[in-house]
Length: 158
Image (tube, rainbow, N blue to C red; front, side):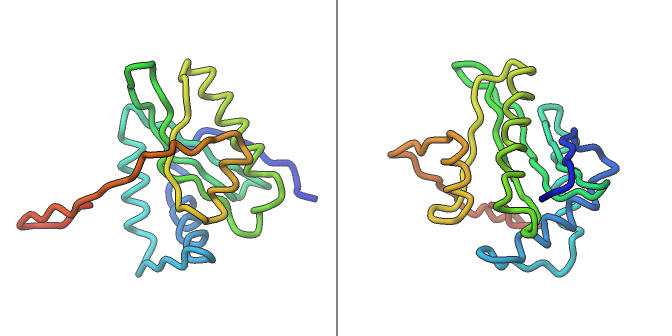
């Protein structure tokens, strides 16, 4: 059984710990992503925090961050939605109901902020897809995700 978990708002003091957790989580199965350091993820999270539409949360167990959700409020013609950009939980804490409790907390925060929906994208066939489906999310058939690399003199962005 897990010790009690606290769900709280992500703050700038938590960025480095969240970045390390992100790298640790996504370097595990089924993603197997690798980074030379966690510094690009620190920058990624810091950019999110600087956005006035940002809404982020963490799971703490015994003062250790074991999960996080990074997202933002997204205006839409039917109201304002919460877009989950990243949601990650340490592999040792997955499959124990903690993620579902976290999602309930996130949903309550959305209600409190008068947001009308939660939207996201995830890898088809990965464990995250079944997690979201178990938590009431539905697939929007017919939608696809598109991207295009844009090259400038200084950098590439996706």
